[in-house]
Length: 202
Image (cartoon, rainbow, N blue to C red; front, side):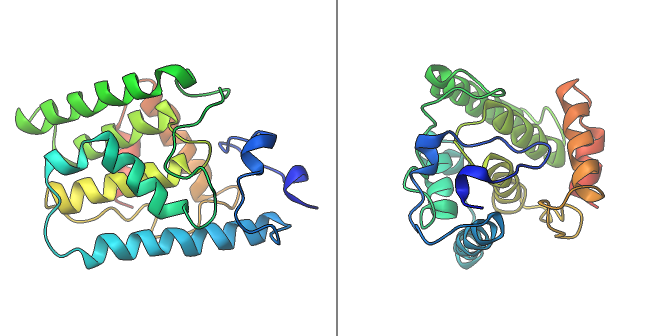
């Protein structure tokens, strides 16, 4: 089938042809092989967060440097452009030239939410997760990146239990949990975060 003909599930953003050229392992030919390669890479990033015993500080996490570094750790063995903001526009997300501006606004907002206790810890992390996935900073991996950012925020910064996201069942399969997750995201688009918070704890 090859990367050029790969199907995409609902909620996934197709890669442009030049983005596909950034694949570091040219032997990958199917969507399953790509998923497996990305998953191994992401597991390395998760281990990095677990092995770090001390807390991450708000000042450290809520920076463009950290946001990009986490994405690089998640997909840097898979994609040459991992950790770099996308340079193409998609059917969702901020304009490619406004990604940095939108991200800085989010980081400032999140610091305010934390410092002034505007929302509960869960809602802060989930609002952050939703906003950053809406910005769509990267060419690929935005949903997975936003969930790991939320996990770091809730556990390593806000010192609460890590999210379960449907008990870890894969999101790449259509139906079931993925449909529930996408529905919760659509509700968050309307300003209703309760479903997404509930899903994160399911």
